[in-house]
Amino acid sequence: MNELKAESSKEFLKGDKVLWMAIIVISVFSIFPVYSASSNLEYIVNNGTTTGHVIKHMFFVIIGLVIMRMVGMIKYEVIGKLSSGLLLVTIALLVFTMFTGQTIEGASAARWIKIPGTPVSFQPSSFAYLMLIIYLCRYLTKKIKRDRLPIENIFYIFGSILLVLLLVGKDNGSTALMILIVSVAVLIIGQLNWKYIAGFIGTSILAITLFIMVALNTNLIGGNRVHTWMSRVEVFLNSKQGAQVEDESDKAKNYQVMQAKAAIVHGGITGMGPGKSALKQMLPQSASDFIFAIIVEEYGFFGAAFLIALYLIIIIRIVMIASKMPAFFGSLLVLAMGIMIFVQLAVNIAVAVNIIPVTGQPLPLISYGGTSMLVTYIQLGLVLNVSSRIQVFDEEGMGKKQSIEEINDIA
Image 1 (tube, rainbow, N blue to C red):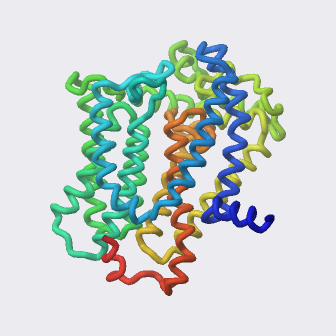
Image 2: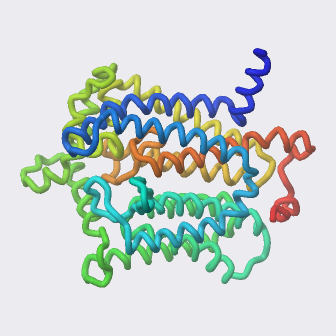
Image 3: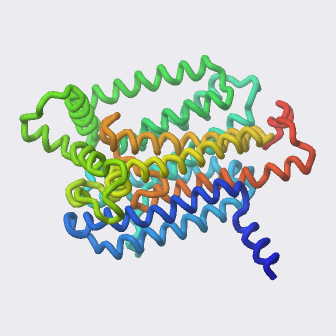
């Protein structure tokens, strides 16, 4: 009977067990800082109750773990083949969002779509980002080392990236920049010719510069947030000069960063203890974008170091899985998912400690909010999916890395 239970547990935790454990520990831990920080939503934003928010968060954690396991049950090759169709669906949702998008909790950008008949809203940009990267991984795998016409790369690769960037960037500049960075990384790892990559980077820089100049000096691009981006960069640069800020408007713009830094300093080495943050009521977005600052305040340097160590374990296991996977598509897909998670993690922490300007990026697996959390679980589900196939490839005598001919047979 005990052996049957052990086998059942082993089957549920299919894939890399160390990665599973790190994900579960972070997921369970996330409940405590969200419960503490969400009191800001109740008492300051006047939105719901702390208990209601933590129950909602726990619901998304459970759903996320279930989705992660379900993703592991589908062959990742099948997901790759479906990616082009799913990318078109998410692009259609992005277009729909441009006309019907809603704001949530006072956000100034319309990024959410509400599901009719329900109180549930989601961000299409997060799913479009994921589908784009999966699509790129499969396309590069199918076409690796093949002679392709320039028009193929322009249309199928760069056209797809720029279309998503255009639709996302108008309302969400930080996510658009992350999409660009991760896409370029995938193109490099996917062995696309360097002349195409260099040309794409140059074109992107030119396009971004032109977009900003037009948005700042004309009214041709309505509803853009370029002025907000520039203001955040200006506030960040001023905060780095070390000068005393006298202007009240500048103080207001720098308020989030000042409170986040105060929370981190207040936490010290050992922290104030779970639920004992003194600044969670004064720090906007304390349950989402700035939750790392609350974690440091309540759990101290040691708690933050432990959390970062868990994230590092996840990243290291992802690299190990990619290195062991003989199938090029599986290896590239795992690395791409790892880069996406790492970039989001690095951006969130960098904002909290004032290394880069303020952006609205959540802390993976921890920040309060459903869409980003579910996307992260899907990403990790794909990684676990690939890790569970490594042994199968070995058993089929494919332990060596695939040849170019084998890679090109993926489709």
